[in-house]
Image (cartoon, rainbow, N blue to C red; front, side, top):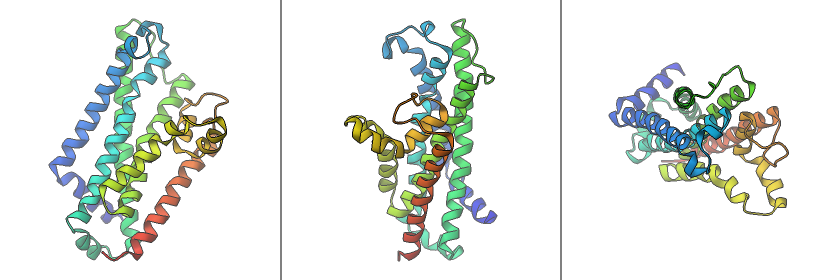
Length: 256
């Protein structure tokens, strides 16, 4: 398995496109978060000095939403390249066990996504500190339980959607299917919120976004999104396990 993961990482970083794309993902996400947090007078109708420390950090962390979308696209393009270029035959000749092949990709993108996510969140957090300092406001301290929970919870978002994209792309065998599936899952709560409370009560608690918001502490108390810690973790794992099993079974039976 170690050799498979090393080979997968080499496939990713061998290409200049991949290295440039990941650097741009980090830079664009950081810039987007910074812009969101310094334009609150336009987006929220409130001066930045009227916001709490938590609100400024939260606004800045919106950059992680963009990072998730960019990482979804990168993951789908990286995996689908083997299908479109038909190098999948060579890869499967080297690793005939398709389950092991799938797990190798899954672990590789887990490691990549968690590294990218932690780096982006850390940079955005530091960016928030600079913004607070520029406005003579108190620093955001990780000693504050709410801020610490929020920062740790936000890290999960790119990782979850990246892994979801791995399973979806292998299932559909193309980047379009992988990207569409993950984006639809990501934006579905916004559509559900347009329906009645009865529909929201049934659907929102089973959406990944509700679990992520609950773990980060951003789900409003008493809302349909509010879930317990263990329920939230279990829900995210259930989504990943079910999609992975379906993708693996289809991948094992499919003739290319």
